[in-house]
Amino acid sequence: MVYDNYEKILGKIAEISGLEKEELERKVEAKRAKLSGLISKEGAAQIIAAELGISFDNEKLKIDELLLGMRKVNVIGKVLDISPVRTFTTKNGVEGKVVNLIIADETSNIKIVLWDINHIELIEKGEIINGKTVEIANGSMRNNEIHLGSFSELKLSKEVLENVKTEKVVKEKNILDFKIGDALGVRAFIVQAFEPRFFNVCSECKKKVTPEGEDFVCQEHGKIIPEKRALINIVLDDGTESIRSVLFHESLPDLGITELENPERLINQREDLLGKEMIFSGDVRVNKFFNNPEFIINNVKNVDINDLIGKLEEK
Ligand SMILES: [Zn+2]
Image (cartoon, rainbow, N blue to C red):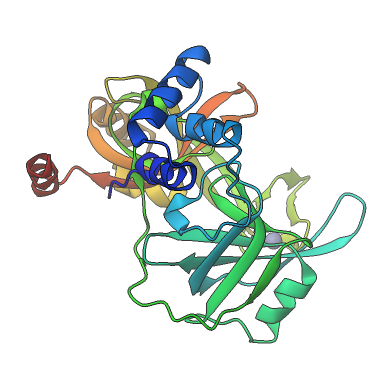
């Protein structure tokens, strides 16, 4: 699925400013040239908007018009999914709760992260359930999610949304254009595959645990029998650029890695990966150790030839 966020945002700026799209486009290119291409087209358009005195604050936007870094996001969507309420304790010993929702409108869907006890109470009381439409005000965009704190608003809406987009929306981009925080898909070749690394997780909460003497202890669940997990680092290249990427346990079979317990067969499976072209989707994050961008892959698919032909015909 490809959609062009940039075109939409440009249209919105044109609508509010009364300037021609072509002129805005020239401004965007000039801004990008000035910043040596370090900024995406969307990002440059946001700066142009700010320079023109246009604020998207408190504008009701469609989900696919939301951009990274936006503050005071107002949006309406139908609740598709609600995660269980999780509790955590901060470093200062304060108890906190967090819940994720997925909401959708007719353009796209997005994850909403609730941190405020009053908002979470609406879920706990069963007032906000799947299928209800909610109104969000004053949220802020973080990593392609809308985060709601105590200054944000969350309430049920009277609006009825039909034909909401329920399938996961993945933007496609060239690796050269990857930016931190992007959630996207790319068709690329595997050019390097490192040895899988193993670690242990709590069988209850799936959080990483490390051995303490003979035992494995989860902070929340005490002494547990650990589950062994694996991850693999690969390098992807789509012809524009390459990026170090990581794939976790659940996605390994889709990649073709199934023989985790058999070192010899594992080597063969790893070698088979080299040169393989697949479709990867995930998030671009900063690797804290190397301090460079890393692609966290959460889905791998084989290239569907019919799909490709369809796309070529569209052009
Ligand atoms: Zn646990």
